[in-house]
Length: 148
Image 1: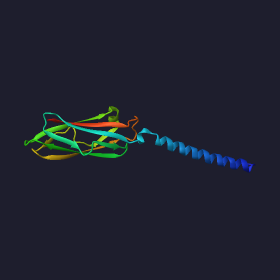
Image 2: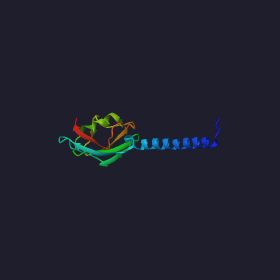
Image 3: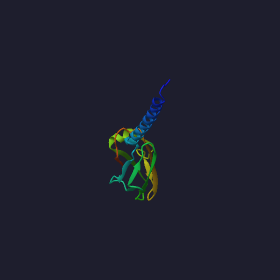
Image 4: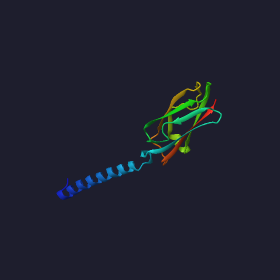
């Protein structure tokens, strides 16, 4: 097929180098994909003034990597001696992140009754879709407990 051995050798070498360059380009593009970068998240908890609850998380700042399941632990304590029911609302900033977030387990938007002086532990388990298309590097997850 090839009459000249040098031409054949040059084509093989060229093909080899083009393949290496192609692999390196694919690798660089994957590394520069914003979805591969972790998102720094600030966790905010608050309680409405009419509810005698203490509400907090064990960490104020976390990192979420798109595609990984993340569990965030919270504690709520009823500071009164009465049984009281409250409900937490959930908000995410920037709002664009919400469309890529799946709450696999959440205590939000459900009535939570705590006996007087008792403490409960709750968990938020979430997943951020690895196909997140926005270049989101920082976010806020906020919970506010209201009297129900």
